[in-house]
Image (cartoon, rainbow, N blue to C red; front, side, top):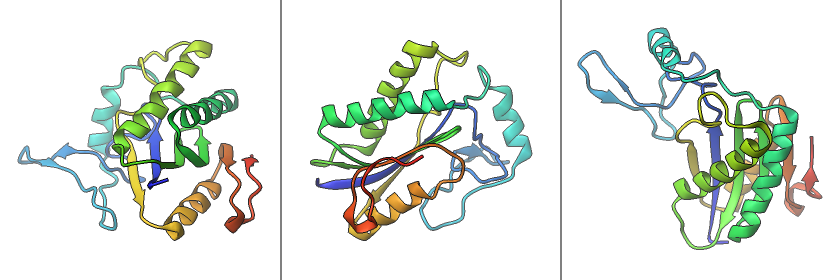
Length: 186
């Protein structure tokens, strides 16, 4: 594989701009200037109740929270998508409100396209069994796409996925360096 990525996406409505936990979204300051603090290693925005209330009012449906059955369906679809695309999926973490994927890809496709494919095919699998949510989507529009520049970064990303709090499903490929046989962990 030529590139490795740690990809993250939240479910629709589960982590809004203004959230006290912190957020990376664009917003307008008092002068109307568009602001976004999204440079890795620098502070991000947090705890802006008025912004969060505004975002909440704009929701087109209830926030999405995955069930165990939905997480299992997503895992199956993520594995199928990676296989069809010739990608190497190393780790998957599916929580009620977000996902993490560690994936290797040949060449240098845009990470937006990679994450978009996982979300698109994941949505189709969910829609077939559970129908579309009231909002019309399972996901937030964008997501985090972190390039993993070396083997140490890849292993650190896999460990990060394995250490998620409250996972519904955790899956890893066999990774000798971490003594992981691969398969479903949770």
